[in-house]
Length: 77
Image (cartoon, rainbow, N blue to C red; front, top):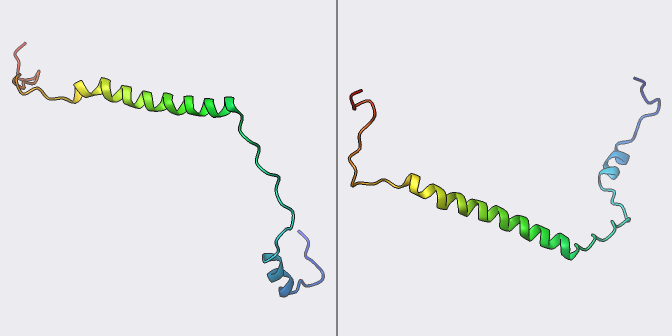
């Protein structure tokens, strides 16, 4: 590694932090109809998957009080 021979003034460093470019970025491209439809379809698929997993999983979470709760360990072999 080599060192700079001339010192860098601190004012230059402070000025570099405040520097702003006058170059503006190009405007964003407009999304096509097919891209927007694809995003909607993806979102709809994700929501449908979450709702479907809730519908399928709810019976497993439900506790029936009509059946007595017995573990397999309490039953004789």
